[in-house]
Image (cartoon, rainbow, N blue to C red; front, top):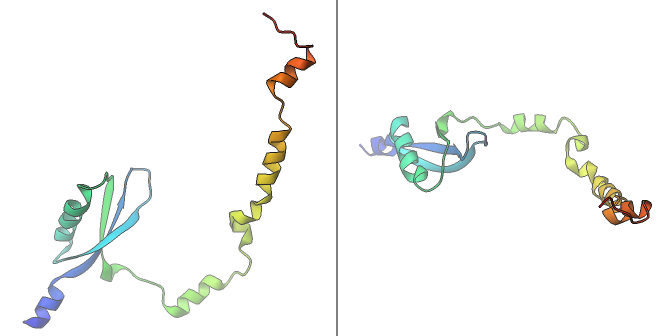
Length: 118
């Protein structure tokens, strides 16, 4: 009987997104006897607190992580710097230089001798 009590509840992970166009974010884990009850519990505990466009409830046993030997495949490319934005750090300085050279209204009016068409 005790073993039955230990396996009666299953662990579920709850993901939600605030708007239809936003991405899903992990929110919390919960214990429930089945997927339907897990969905009800997720809705009751989460939807009344924050705006929600959609919820996913996933049994933790259905989530597959990478084995240690599989994680080594993530290191197969040594040079990924071109994929990160840190390689574009010079752009801020370049943009600042460009902004400093922009013409303002006073300078443009000085070309016409300060005359306006009023």
